[in-house]
Image 1 (cartoon, helix red, strand yellow):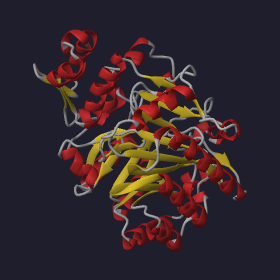
Image 2 (cartoon, one colour):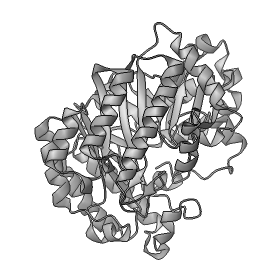
Image 3 (tube, helix red, strand yellow):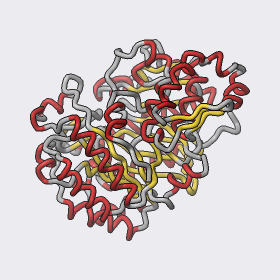
Length: 458
C-alpha cells in the first residue's frame, strides 16, 4: 500500500485539467468550423488501414435535477422528446457518414448524459439499430452505458445486455440518505446493491460505480460508511470525483447550501480515507480518480503498459479517432478536436439545415501534438522516454522542454517523479498526483494559469 500524507494531499488540492484531451476543451475556437471537421472526416475516410473508431452518444435528458451536476443536460418529464432527439441523431449520423464513408469498424461505444436510460428500451433499440446500420461494431469491443439506478430494473438491465452493452456504470455518488437529500438524488442503497447483483448475474463484463466526495452534509464519518458499503458492493471499477462547487458557472449548484459543504481539511480527509479503503479492499489505483480490481482489464492494461486515455477517461482500447454524436458532444479526428452546438435549439437548427452541428474546435499544431504525446505518456504509462519523443518529433527533449525540465526538480523533491538521463518516471506516490505532473508540460496553462477554473486535481 502507498501511504499518502495529508500534507501532500493538502499541497495538491488545486485546480487543473483532466487531460481527456490536450489542448483542453477551453482552448477550442469558433474559427474551427463544420467545414474543417468535414475535411477531417474525408481525410480519415481515405485511410485504408485506419484503426477502429470510438463512438460517443450524448443523451441530454434527465427527469430530475441533481444539484451537484455540471453536465450538459435538459430536465424534463416529457419522454416524447426522446423520440424527437433520436430523429436528430439519425440525421447527424447520416451527415457524418456522408463525409466519412459507411461501414467503418467501431471498437468502443459509450452512451453518456444526462441520463441515457431516460430513453425507453424501444428507443435504445432504435438507436443501436441505427448505429449498426452505419457502423460495424466489432466483436470484443467495449460497449458501455451510464445508468441512473432510479431508472432501471432487472428487465431493463437484461434489455441493455441484449442490445450489446457489456459494460455499465451506476451513478451512486453517496449512500448516506441525508447527503442524497441535500443534492436532490435519493436512491436507497438496497436498490443499487440489487441492481449490481442483477448486472453480475446477467453477465456484464465490467460494473463501475461513481462516487463524489465533498458534497453537502458529508462528513468523514458518513463517507466512511459509504466506503464500507462500496467495499461490500465490490464493483469492478470505481470512479471517485471531488465535488467542485462553482455556482457561478453551473446554475444547479446554486441550490446547494454553502454552509452545508464540508471544510477543505475534511474533504482532503475523505480522499485519504477513500485511498486507504480502496487499497485495503485490493483495488489497483489506475490513475487520476479511477480504481479497478486486479483482474479487471483496466488494471491489467496498466500493469502491461497498454493503458490509453480519451474523452471518456482511461481505456484498454488503442488510442483512436472518436466520432461524437449529439448536443455538446466532443470528438477527435486526426489532429483535430470538434464540439457540437451546446444548446438543443442550435443543434436542431443546424441539423435541419442539413449542416454538421459542429460550432467550435481546434486544429492541433506540431507543438500541440508533441506536448500531447508527452502528457498522454505521463497520464497512461507513467513515464516519458526522451528518445521516443525525440525520434517521433525530431527534437532534443531537454532543449525543447527546457523550462519544463526546470520545474521538475520540485516535484522530484516531493517524491512525485524521478528524472534520469533517459526520461521521466512517475513514482507510486506521484500516480495520485499525475495531473499535477502533466500540468508542467501544458503550455497554455503555464502561460495563462488564471484563464479558466478547472476541477480539483484530487
